[in-house]
Image (cartoon, rainbow, N blue to C red):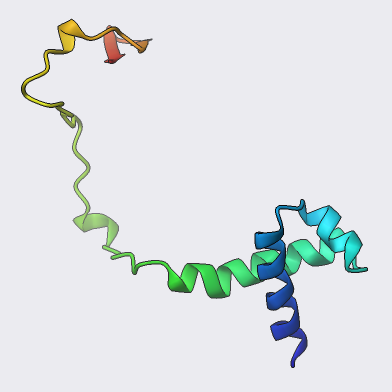
Amino acid sequence: MSKKEEMFTLVEQWRESGLTRTSFANQHGFGSESFNYWCKKQYNEVVKAQSPAVMTLAKSSIKTPRFVEITSDPGVSPKSLPVRMEFELSGGIHIKIY
């Protein structure tokens, strides 16, 4: 088994262990900085690669809306729900989360 395979196996064991990175590294006899390196490397090579592909578009083709309306169940009136969070932004903008 190569060093990379060995370390990736240990990273997977750490993820399942519930321990902190430092505790796990100490239990296995290597430094936390070294283990952090392998965790990041394993994440970049394995975890990201298994994630669904993200479509990338040229910046010039991306049109960002200035306003996005989010609606709830049409049968529920927001006025009947308690306000859970409210934000008052500059320019007189109010955001209420019910």
